[in-house]
Length: 202
Image 1: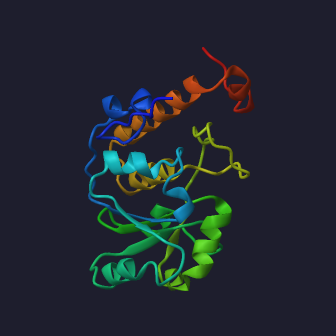
Image 2: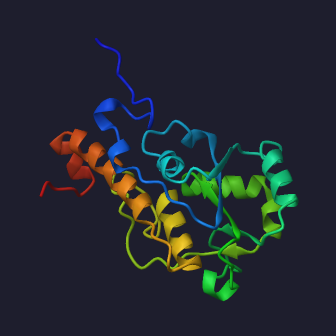
């Protein structure tokens, strides 16, 4: 059996290369992702796509406060407003918080259960005001099931926040890469597997 070949640029299998759909996106917002270790090598993780589209994206991997020491140091010296994107009893929309375009936003990457665990293991995050998203449609991340109807991929959540912060931002590059990855995954699935994702060939 021949060894699977990977693209040297996007690092996806050559048969699922997304380079044709990658267009860099520059934004004034500082986007930071705290990623659970179990997501790093997950084939369907969207942070991989975000890194291709947003070269300035900062990703910190870990679980405990000690794991995120470098991130805490970075935030401590920052002279910009910092927000955590996570729904809570005290969270606000971007408009309610009057968050500026050049803010630092922190997103937690993982399943709901693992994201909650990240939050509990990092109580220092509580000092930052929380933002929640106004989700008016279901996630297009149909290749990965979620228990909550308001679940979005990290890429989709990031795009929503960026648009809320600045309506002039064109997040098309994020969704173009996202759609390319989703379609590659769907086309590679056997028909009976596609059925589990409520997908039908058009």
